Image (cartoon, rainbow, N blue to C red; front, side):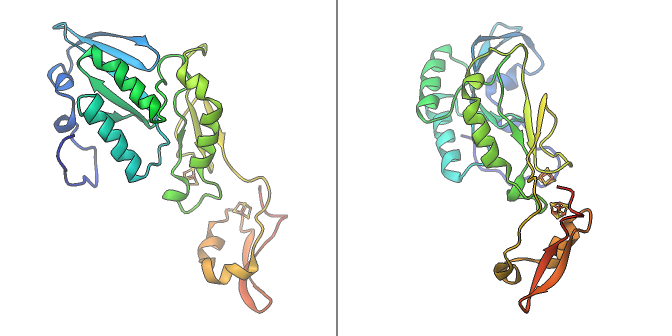
Length: 236
Ligand code: SF4
Ligand code: SF4
C-alpha cells in the first residue's frame, strides 16, 4: 500500500497519488469495458492495455482489524491499490488477469462476498446512525447487516430486471442518499423512559430540543429529574 498521508479535512483529496498506475496512465483514454463475470469489471484502454476490478461487499462501518485485513489482501492478492465505492463496496484493481481468481477466492474465504455489479442488488448505502449523528433513535448498521444477509444471493447474482440500489435512513433528512428502494428505519411507538437512568446518562435539554413536535418535556419523577412524553403529540 502507499505511504501515510496527512488527513484532508475539507474538499476532495487528490486521487492521483493513490491511484493504480494503469488507471493513472490511461486516465481519459478508456475504449470500452465489460463484466467477464459477476463482481468483476474489465476496462480496456485505447492502447489495448486492460485492468480487472473485483468488487466485494463490506459491512461499511469497519474496525481497524478488518481494514488491515482488506489492505493485506490488496497487497498479497492484488496490486496494492483499492478504492471504496459510494455504497461501501471495496474494489481491488489488478493488471494481470491471472490474479483475478485467486483474489476472489481469498475475498470469499475471508467473508467478503464478490458481486454487486450489473443487474444485482448492490450494497445498501446507509446513514451514519449512532456513529456520528445525534438525532437517530435507530442505528443503520445492524439493520443493513440483517438486510444484506437476506439479499446475499441477489448481491452475488445479476438476476434482477435492472440494477437495484437500496438505501436506509433513520429520519426524513434521509442522509442515506437516493435509491430505487428507500427504507426509513424508525420506531413506530412513542419512546419509553427509564426514569432511574435518565438523570445519570441523559442530556435532558438536548433530548427535549430534538423532538420536532415538543412531545418531550422535562419532569420530576420520584424526586429525580427525568423526562415525560406526551403520547398524544408524538407523531410516531
Ligand atoms: S438519516 Fe437523519 S437521523 Fe439518520 S444519520 Fe441522517 S440526519 Fe441523522
Ligand atoms: S415525535 Fe418526539 S417523542 Fe415522538 S418519537 Fe419523535 S422525537 Fe420522540
